[in-house]
View 1 (tube, rainbow, N blue to C red):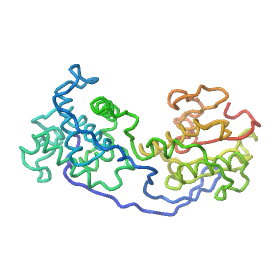
View 2 (tube, rainbow, N blue to C red):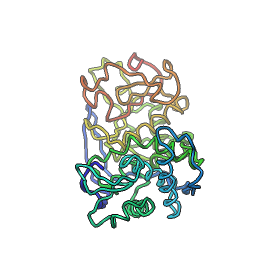
View 3 (cartoon, rainbow, N blue to C red):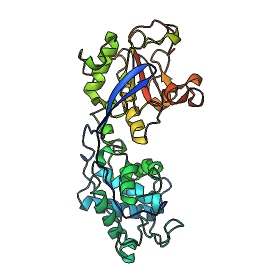
View 4 (cartoon, rainbow, N blue to C red):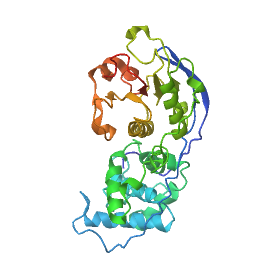
Length: 362
């Protein structure tokens, strides 16, 4: 338990606010909106388990007693008709609150917190007996989780935060992979089939083949054919995800780069993941990683020269192919402490396409 405001549930309405932004001489027109889902994160129905059939050696750092509580959490969710992802969020939350143990104590922030989910004695979480009962405490957790609007589009830790009202809304993020491993091994559901959010559902919104067209009207001025093709394909695959994050900018004269870059010739576009100079949220960063990986997966069809994101670059002519986090190449001249958030490409994905005409990106 890391906060003192649990038990209340606040749902914020999505807003749409037109705004304009100038980054590097480019005018970005954009709208801030709520996150849009591209597929269903609840397509995998929660699995009911045999509470007596537990791995004798545990799973990772989680022993049989802790796994027994994980099974109780999962079975409660399954009985309520919830998804494997919801089950995993429940397990993740209990990992972060009590290490999957029914504990009869709180902490400095919440001395009256008790049980698997460290639910407080504030009238929102039943009696002491309810909070110490792993079945009833799990039911109370999932009853509140069901009320979180748009949870399929949210990062798991943010869903848990809406229920628990933790002081640090990212407190649970470090437990997500462990929770997926436990749920996967207990249920037989592949860990890859438990998405972080709708952006990562298998086969949609990051898994399809590029769908090409010549429709690049929003960024058509001075744009190269290859950049137009990539823009259209990204729009077809993901929707205009940048509209809710800060905009997109392509052709820009940029005399300071001595004609070596791709923006002056319209062969590069910057897809914003946050307003200029702002570090993206955890959710937007995860979305950026899905987009970047899809570009890498389809780099030949998209005629990719290089990708720059989050202080790193990937060039298919020089770098190995694989998961972005494993094959990306860190570059000293993208150090955020030296060049700032925008210069380090933390707030946007830079995509260069088409023929080489300079040395930038090598």
